[in-house]
Length: 580
Image (cartoon, rainbow, N blue to C red; front, side):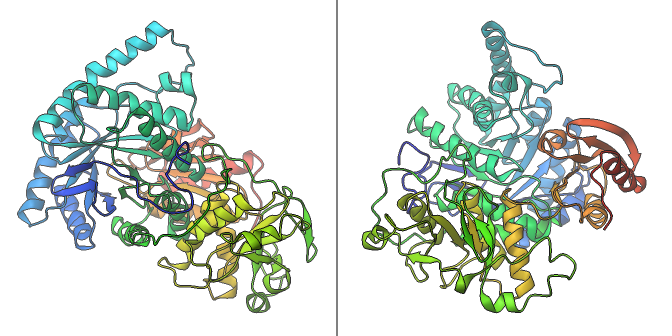
């Protein structure tokens, strides 16, 4: 297992890292997983930032980030920091930097940590495709060293920490040319900067590999951790977790639970942010719910690890199984992942003719599906499946093992012909709310290609349980039942009221099954993070919106009050509109 990305796929063992101090707050080492958020006010608005930061501190937020898009904005961090400290708030501040090394140098004077994006700190992402010779590539790296070193030396002298945060979709042209827009490119982009810092004997670094697509996000973090281990024992830097542009409401919490929870379950992650298109303070509670769910050391569980891993941690491949018929539905063998509900919930569902029920049906009744239930740790129970015909198999209720790991063990231990039913609970106590537990215990397996059907039981309302099952399938990217949204959480760079816009867009387009719409505050990460969206709604100037089709801007500087209708017209032009 050490050739993968964690020491044990079937027992959580927290990755050992050095401690990095951000002001008075330690990240990594023996510290708990720290919970962060980001201010939404303009960094020039001292009063608004201070009030919002105090609200976050009151909610328990342990690290607060602000954007500093220019040197002018960065300079006002002095006033914000002074006012917060005068109010008795000691929560450390982080400046978020894109494109502007001079803003980073100014910000480092006033905050405890600086976040840089290696994709745009020195390099730029251009539209023109070009190839780099080895000499040209080396020259670009020398430019990186020259531009980045002053910030490293300043942070080293004054005790500032740094996050090297790569984002999927905002990699430099140079990295894209050699690696493509891939997890490999994200990791190499960050390591280039880390090597410069280490040459200068600077080590107060934290890494992040964020993406709005949970598959990409998880794979990038796994690859990062493996690469750090390969570089050497002293590359044991902490990791910050997050799913970017997760959106709002329950969908965003499910998506964050899948991405962040999957990694925490493997002992990866020292600090996190649940990014929501909501008030910043709303990010704190779900952040702590995830952190606390994996805070308790796992009791030893006797498991004989199978020789083969149950999935490829760096590439998505759906697990093979034979197609079988259950209650008139085809399961396994590449068929859609099916939704299973207990009999009592199926009986309580509305009629199939009611609105929405045909798109999200309960497909299999659990009690009569003849599911084979086993303890994946018991060889005698597994032996019976070696020669048995293809069946739907699940972990038996009451097995004393964390559910995610137990279901992985099941996938690694039974013949491929059998399908797997994923459960959201084994009947015991769960530390997470129902939606987030389903994200961790079901969604985390689905993004690794494990699972032919899902069973939701924690949610006791029939329609709510059915909706949750389909929402997890959608968040994991394995089965679409409604419109997909990529929505940024807003920050001081946001050029319009993104929460109000998101509400209007959802109300107008929420019936467009399978259409993916990105709602982005600005152009920093917008065009990149929405790379796989069908349509994009992006802040281009104060109160003005740019509309995209894929990567291409097609309508520029539309007044915000008119932009939703323009978006609808654009969707109609491309043949993806249907009436409610």
